[in-house]
Figure 1: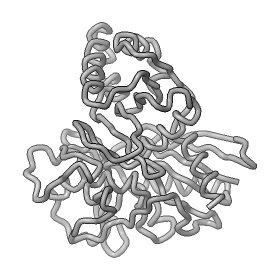
Figure 2 (figure 1 turned 90 degrees about the vertical axis):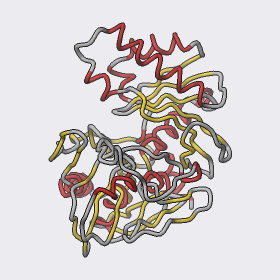
Figure 3 (figure 1 turned 180 degrees about the vertical axis):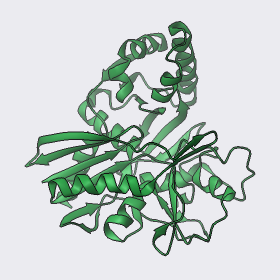
Figure 4 (figure 1 turned 30 degrees about the horizontal axis):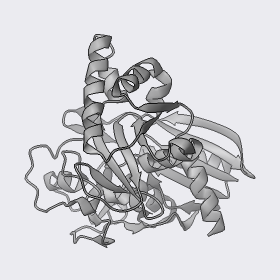
Length: 338
């Protein structure tokens, strides 16, 4: 039995597979923030791991795989948290002058929610840095380890050179393939992956005829991306993907969180904002002929998504079903063969 868990920004979703067939699924709400006043967004890390442990103990799976929201972190001292989980929604790095340099090879750009920048505002006696993925790994197995798709979002990892910058804190070990790292309650635990990359993998595999186009990933946050066979430079983030490929990504685009704020706004205005943002993003990426739209927003705001897609003028397909869980299923199958 395989347990696949997607720790998203709104929900922690899970699905059970036995002999390749889905036999059950469900979700828990992602814990409410302890602090949600701009620029801060903090969540109880112990509550997050408690939800995950509860799901694992409920099913006692043979193997457990994860995808996680990226750009968040938690600090430890002597193996215990000394900060809450500081979410990707936290922008305490705004206006801070960095004490480091970031190039495209790091797979991430300098922005207010970059963990490496955010760390400059903290004054703690912590000894270890964890991404959300590596925090789950550590709590479950004792290993501060995660997949590079999650690790790179911290800003410490040069993806192209496969190197780690020096830091006063112990940083997570980053793997370049999904591998077993330990056990929890008799379940084999595998390195967590970034949720965006897992979602893209699931979507392009389910809709292979659209796999060479753009992917509009519409979750709580929005991204427009495309898969490149090799590392390339441009006005985008060159995020690590799977199989040695690069996920060229324009970030910070309107999606679920934006639509919540726009709930009482004029619909035409909301559509116009989304159209302009995604049209601008298209100009930053290499040319493709089609767009595959995925993520929760496609299910709950399909009419709006299709109006925006029509205005963008490319062939498109909307996939309401595929997501990170489907990507994890593919990775689980590959891990079994390895």
